[in-house]
Length: 287
Image 1 (cartoon, rainbow, N blue to C red):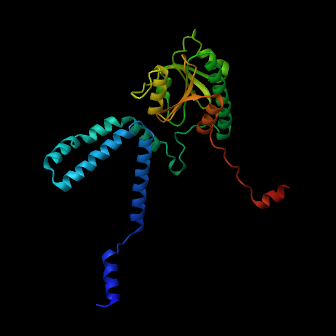
Image 2: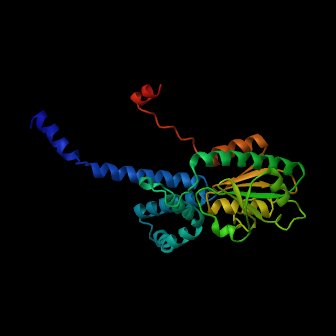
Image 3: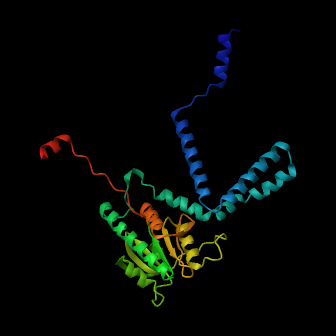
């Protein structure tokens, strides 16, 4: 057999017909795996995920080495492993499904806000300034505060637990709501589309055991709200006056006014839409 025949045999041996559907299939799976890893890294369940991977690796080694007792033990654990994973990762799975539901397929705007994006951008910019001013002032006076800024996840169920206000947001109104003598100071304020939608709202508490002992119910409620939605929650500690922000199940502490403003600006203000370019002939005609 000549050299040409050997090369032909090697080519036919390793040749694989790869079509467009196969490439798309691999790309979709790679994207899902990447998003899953990114989601795990952003949560406190990363150690649990690593433990599951170690368990799977141990099972593979036991299969190769024919450790029957170890295989039986791991099989017994993994028989109800799917249910355990759903229970353990319930907040993360819920957030992932909500993110899929928020995806704007084919430009559909069925559940989006009907406010003009340009007007909404200006409203949110003013609202963020008011939130930051109020947070700074309440931090100085050690006034506890809890402010929830709604994004894509609808918070109507949370709003129903409080008193609907539907008021413009100003530092004075926020400071009055959270003043210790008022009836609504213990609950949370929900801000929707740059306006105060409700006050005195009850938030779900986080079950995160890693929360420090120096953080009370407000911080646990802020973290719980961020675990169950994509909302951004601003907290002012009554004991220390420390300003914190909760987002995606993570609590960021010890913020000053400028840092808080920069973070809210990036998270809440809609991107500026570019004006459509007019045709050259129309510009020339108008000039």
